[in-house]
Image (cartoon, one colour):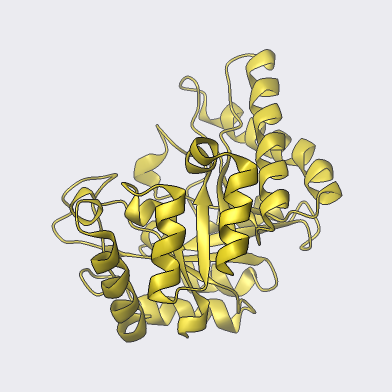
Length: 268
């Protein structure tokens, strides 16, 4: 299993891309998921060189999406940014571009969902030309007002099913979907369309809506059960550890990576 572990860069957000790559090399972590703001800090060419020279593969680039906007010009600007994200993912050889689809610019959530569907439809041909798979990641409903109007795996699959499974799939993040009473039915429905799998834990009591994710084993999520369901649906790719938590960010980088591997072996 450890040959599938991927460091999602946000887990050690205080580190630069170069430091994250060096940490993966020391900890023998074979995959990394890169965030675009870290790529921008380092530069795309240098980011590519760092991961290539370290012999590490890129499981995903995060993030594309954020399609809705109040004006047509705003939606076009968002689409243009998504095209840049596709180009970055292609250059880095990423397995997928993760789409966090974006909130409504006002109270009209139905229009926002329509704009998400239209944005993906317009992005698909460009992604196909660049050999990049798009992965729609549904977020927990508590993020609907700020980050994504796509809040269930059912919604994400329905969007993905408008396109070939070779072009558009879904990303299953246990933090966002563990609560869903239809989760296992939807995972089975997503067979052949899962392009990413993210793990962390839901701490009780939850210390912070954004920054309160826990290390695997520190919360209530049935991580292994979900992983087994995802594998039964055909996903055998890298498994990203993605943790937003300032306490973890403040720990020494190598200490976090060692703990991450230990918990991955036990809990995932």
